[in-house]
Image (tube, rainbow, N blue to C red):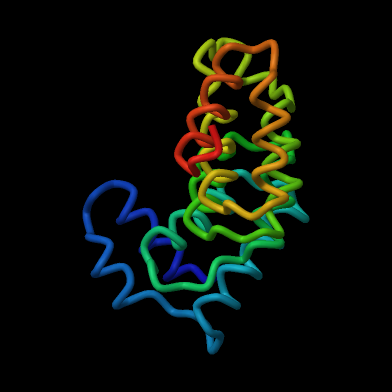
Length: 168
């Protein structure tokens, strides 16, 4: 990412410029928004760079009309070198892509050291909600299996999603 874009993002993070101003002044370097962000996420993943990943996710939220880089987000959801799993799960929930089912299902049970304190299982809950939003037979099958989990939080949220689909 060029120096001007980096400075714009720093200005946004420090609340010196708005998202609209960043969007207006940001250079996509001759690429489409989707291509630029996808390349940024690939670079972040290749270099295991959490700051670059944060920039990419921030740009997805700012450029709301962007086509989500689902493949990259699915992969990043399962990586342990960053702390943006909940944001990624939220983006995948918005995207509602059936190609995310496996990654979401794996993330529900994956243990990330930085989330050891989280008794509310916020990441698992977001992934369950994302499965509910996807709502395909395969997603419903995953929710059905989760509805008999030994973990109360996971079980209750899976049941709620199945009820939302009028399957319980």
